[in-house]
Image 1 (tube, rainbow, N blue to C red):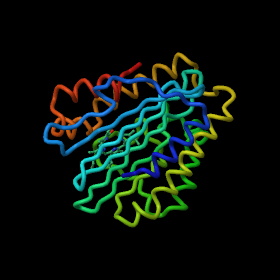
Image 2: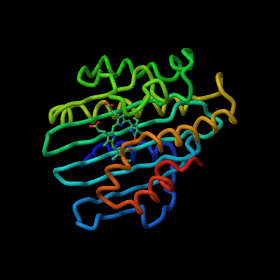
Image 3: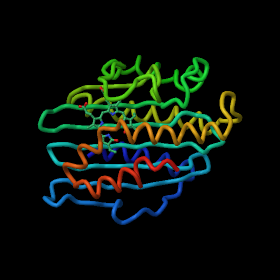
Image 4: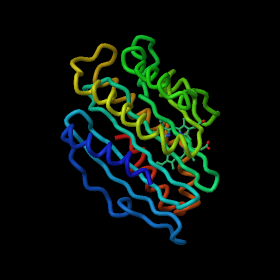
Length: 231
Ligand code: BLA
């Protein structure tokens, strides 16, 4: 599932001269013991991005996940790109979270780098939710315009591809036209990006799922050495 999102992402990665980085076979593709869950991961880097990871989880009718995170190079203060898309087929429920995840909450920084999200929200009314439950702190590494959709099959089939396309396009424009930092220096950017990983390691609910599907040992290794490596 989510092939069309993957295709859009892949085309854009080619456009920005991204190269695939080899990752451990343990993470490339892993199947749960009961064969019900298959996870596939890949990693890229490009002149503007030091790390771009992609995760797809196929759990059949139970759960499908498309998750991707892009870390700009330390010379660029642009937000981290965060995408978490989950489809629960049995329940026919979609959860989509898309954000230009800000490194700081300074008002001018947010306006400069994240406010375009508001235009997307206005275009796609079903994706205009911004209220989070209490898994994450909405004031840390999320923008005021974080796109959240708790939706259904029609949102999955009709809107998701288009909003994802525009979301990615706008984000890459920032990177392509980036000239100089106005808010943070490289040392601060590096600190903030590493802190993002530590924060996510602590908060992300993914490990609970993965523990159930793939066991504690594989999950601990995966979370620490692929998802949130702090380097
Ligand atoms: C929520 N993400 C969730 C939930 C799960 C995952 C199980 C809770 C679902 C629910 O509330 O019904 C699952 N997260 C995953 C999986 C991966 C993962 C399987 O990372 C695999 C790698 N999460 C991110 C990123 C963002 C993000 C990059 O990984 C940023 C856009 C956001 N996920 C995010 C938010 C919620 C969430 C904000 C909570 C939504 C809410 O509170 O309403």
